[in-house]
Image (tube, rainbow, N blue to C red; front, side):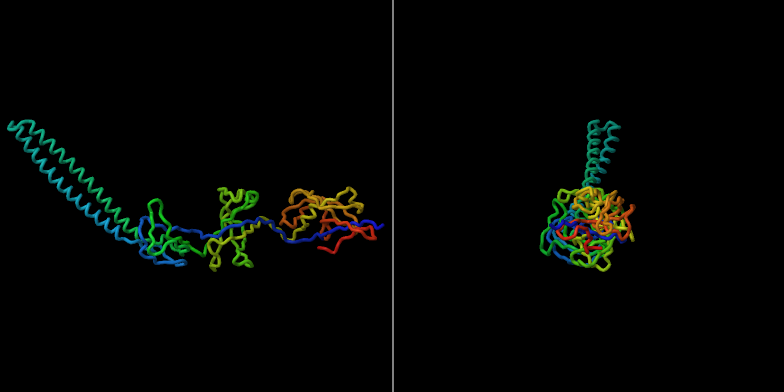
Length: 376
C-alpha cells in the first residue's frame, strides 16, 4: 500500500513595499453649490442662461413677469401720497385747534365765555394732535408698503449670487413658480468647477484610522484606468446611517483643473493610512495556518488552514518548511497589513524562508514532504 504523502503549499519570505489602506465610496460635488430661488410667485418671462453657462455675481439669469408687481407698487405709491396728504390736513386742523384754544383761554380769563367752552376747545386741540400722530403713523405704513412693493418688483429679476457655472436649470419660460411656502429652486450654481470635493462614507470601524491632511486617491466609472488624488480636509463628527451601518463623512479636496470630474460622480476612494518600503512581509494565509497535530516537527502529519492566527496585527506563529520536509514554528510580531500581506516587525523569520500557507494530502510512493512549485 502506498503511503499518504503530505504536500505543503509555501511562499518565500521577501522584502516588499506594503501599504495599509482603508476603502470607501463617495460622491463628487462642487466646494460651494448655491440654490437660486425666487422670493415671489409668478410666471417665468425670460431665461437668460442654460446648463453649463458661466455666470458672474449680479448677472441677470431670469425674469418673472413684473406687471402685477408693478401695479401693486403703483397702488402703494398712491396710498403713500394719500397718507402724506392726510397728514398735512391733520396738521392744519391741529394748528387751527391750537388757535381756537388760545382764543378761548383769553376770553375765559376775561370771563367772556364759560369755562366749559374753554374745556371744549382744549379737548378739540388734544384730539387734533392725536389725529396728527395717527396720520403720521399711516404715512409710515404706506411708506413701508411702497418699499415692499419696490422689493417685490426687484425680485422679479433673478440674478446670480456668486461667480460660477450653472449646473442645473429647473424651470422653463412660461412656467409658474409659487413661493407661498418656500422659495422654489430655479437654478443651481457651482462656484468653481475646478475645485471639487468628495464626500465619502467611511465605516465607524475605519474612521479612527483617518486624519486630516491625509492623502487619498480614487477612481470614477467614467475613467476606470485613471486614478485621481486629493487630501482629506475634515472628518465630520455627524454620523450617517447607510444600510444599517454607521458611517462618517470624510471630506476630500480634489483639484479638477482639467474639468474631467463632474458633480454627482461616484468615487471609489482609497486612504493610505500607513506604508513601509522594503518591509519583510509574509502572506496573511501563513498567519492563519495551523497543523492538525502536535508532531509538526516530524513532518508526518496533516494540516489545515483554520483561522488560529488572531488579528492581522500582533503576535503570531508561522510554520516554516525546513530541509524540504520538516515544518517548525516561529514566533513573530506583525505590523501593518494590506489584506494580503503582513509586515514582520520582529522574530527569527528571515528573508528567503518558506512559510507554509496550506497543506494537501495525496497518495504516492514517497513518504517525504515537499514544497510545491507555487509562489516563491
